[in-house]
Structure formats: C-alpha cells, structure tokens
Image (cartoon, rainbow, N blue to C red; front, side, top):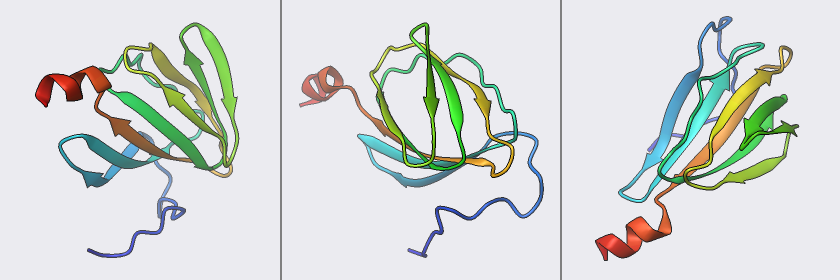
Length: 112
C-alpha cells in the first residue's frame, strides 16, 4: 500500500472527470473523484447506496428532482435507486469528491 493525498489536484487542467478507486471489496468501493470546472454528469440510478463527501470546492446535484448544493466538508447519502446527476462544480478550486458505494442491504441478505 502507498499513501494517497486525497486533496492533491490534477497536475494539468482536466477536461473530463477522473476517478481513482482507493479500496474495492465485494461489498464496498471507495473512490476519489476530480471533477473538471463546471462539470455536468449523465443521470445515474445505481443499484447500491452511495455516500459522498466534498473534500474541496463545491458541487450541485440534482437528486430525485431536487437541487442539493454541497460545499467543502458536506456529505450526503444517496440511497440505492435514487436518480441523481452532477449539475455543476466549482472552477477554483476544482471539486474533489470522496464516494463510498455500499452494496444495498437486500443484496447482502440475498447473498448471505
């Protein structure tokens, strides 16, 4: 294992989202995400719960038809099956997220 600086920005300007998987097991996936300035994502509706925290910058999400503004240090749980997308991210500094994807509870029971 090697140390990871969660706040390290990209060395050069980025044009697309950069995902780095830090930990992955059968039931969880921890990712560090760098979003380019003014980023807008596709619509997601995942089978697993997703907890996220903004490590740097700001981001605005559309989650289940409501707008959620997040600032540095803010966290949010997005339950499995909830439609969501990134509407925008900060320019300076770039938005850095940490996301934890958790297998949905009923999936755990089915596999037990």
